[in-house]
Every structure is written in C-alpha cells, then in structure tokens.
Amino acid sequence: MTSITTLNLGTLSGNLGEFYALPDTHPQAGSTAELPLLSFCVVHQERVVLIDAPAMPGPPEEQINQPPPLLTQLAKHQIAPAAVTDVIITHTHWDHYNGLSREENGHYRPAFPQARHILNAADWDPAGFGELEEQTLRMVEQHGLLTLITGRMALAEGLTIIPAPGETPGHPEEGRRRSACGRGLPVADPTVTLGGG
Image (cartoon, rainbow, N blue to C red; front, side, top):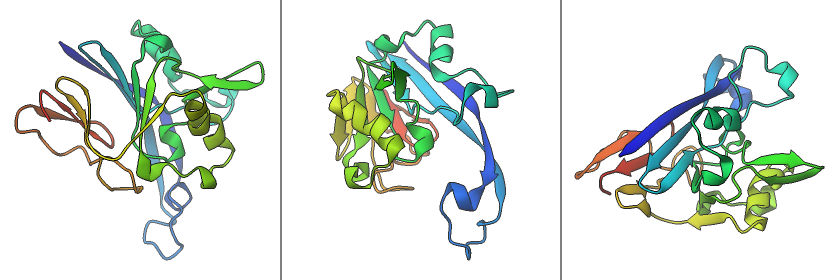
C-alpha cells in the first residue's frame, strides 16, 4: 500500500519579481502573490520519501499563524527523521531545501540523517553557493548523503523520479504526465510515478 501526505508548511507573501528575480520589464515583476510551502511524504513499500524539505524563513516568533514546522508535522504522522529514506530536492530554489538541516551546538546537521538526498546534477553549482546552500546542500554532501542524478531514477518497484528541465536546469518534470502502467503523482514540481515508470 502507498500513502501520500501533503504537508503545508506555511505561506510566503511577497513580490513575484523578488521571489523569482524577474527583470523590471517582466509583466509580473511588480505583482504580489501568496505562495504555499509544501512538502509531500510518500510511504511506498519500504521507502519513506520526502519531496522537498521547506521551512518558513525567519525566527519562530515571526511565524504567527503558520502551520508547525516539517519535523513536527512528520512526528504527528509517526515518522521520525531517521525513518526518512529519501529526500527529493525538486530544484534549487531556497524554499525547496531550506529545511534540510538543523542547527545543533552552533553546527548544522542533516535533518534527515539516514536519508539519501537526491538532486539533479544540473542544479549542483557549489561555486555559486551562498550561506544557505552551504548550511544545507553542501552540508548533506559533506555527510555523504547527496546523490546527484542525470536521468530517471527508480527508488523502489513502482516509484520513479523523472527529471526534465523547468524552472532551473535540473528541475523535474511538471506533474501532469501519467505513466502508461500506473498513475503519476502530481506534486508541486516533479512527477513521481507510482505503479510503473
């Protein structure tokens, strides 16, 4: 049996031009929007897969009226961080990976210490890393938890990642496709194919 849980981690409100670094001439550059921070937890066979690991930016006291953080929500579903087997980072916009780490005694540690963290190789750009990328993406790589992929990747029988270009060079395929022998799971950015692939 496969279970899929949507985890709503909050809503970002702001200028689309700032969120997406749009040029001033872009028709949406001055528009404001509310964008949800979502993660999906797929439990399939022996795998516990997180699709994206977002966190609300800023200190907790600024997050009034926001849902609980990712680890708290997973705990409510009886999923311990060490039980997560895979974290799929759909692409390298900060709101898809800023919950990969937790600070402990002044050092950043993997939030999901047993998980394989999967990222399309086209999105791996250490030369362009800032502080957040060093505390998250580089940190999981330094702990030996990062797997870079260049094509499809089967996570388990009937569970496949399908990369394709999109918002970033390594962005997975938009969630509209259906497998011939199963059903595609539309989840924010990627298609995770269940029952085939």
